[in-house]
Image (cartoon, rainbow, N blue to C red):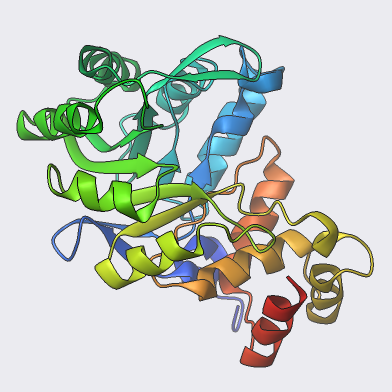
Length: 295
C-alpha cells in the first residue's frame, strides 16, 4: 500500500499468483491460486459442515480476495460442497467452477471408483442442477475406473463436451500413459494429482503437463509432514521470511511450474487469508534449491 491507496495485491492478493488459461490460449483464464472445497464438509468428507454459515463466509471471502477457480466434486458430502458453492457464489460472475464425478460414497472416508458412462452422464446432469448452471466450466473424471474400459469413460467426457454440458475436461489421479490415451479421445485441460513439497511422486506427470500446457492441480498442496515441523526446512524458511510453513509450501508450488494451480482448502477465514497471501511470497533461487534438497 502506498500513500494510503490500496493496490490490487492488497485487495485481491490471489492475483499475484499469475494467470493460466484452462484449455490453452483460447481457454478460460484463472488466477493460479484457487480454492478446494473438500474441507467444507463434515468429518470424513461426509455430511454437512458443523457451521454452514461459516463455510459460506469462507467461500465468499475467497472470491473477495481474488480467488476465481473453485474446485469441488459431487462426492464431497456427497452433494454438500456443490450446494454450498451455489448458496455462496451463484451466479458465479467472473468465477470458474470445476467439479468432478466418478467416485461413489458409502460412508465417511469411503470412496469407490465408478466410471460407467451412463453414471458419468447422470452425475453431470445432477451437478448442472446443483450448481445452477447450463454448462460446467471444468468437468473432471475423479478416478479412472479399472472395471470399465478407459476409452468409454473418456468418450463420455467427450460426449458431454460436444453437447455443450461441459466447457473443458480434466482427469484426476492419472499417469502420463492415461493422459496420452485420453487425449486421443478428448482434449484434456487439467490433471489433478496429489502433489506437494513432501510428495513428488507425480513429478513425471507435472513435467508432461508443463511441456503440453495442461493445467496441473495439486491436491493436498500443503501436506508437508516433517518439513513443516519445528526445525524443518519449511519452518526455517517461514521464520526467515516472516511467513507460515503453509505459505512457503504454496509459494514453492507456484514457482515449481507455470501450469501449477494449487487449490488449498480450509473452513477458517483466517487460514484462507494466510493461504492466499502466499501468492505474493517471494522465494529466491537459493531458497528454492534449499527446499528442494531438504525434501
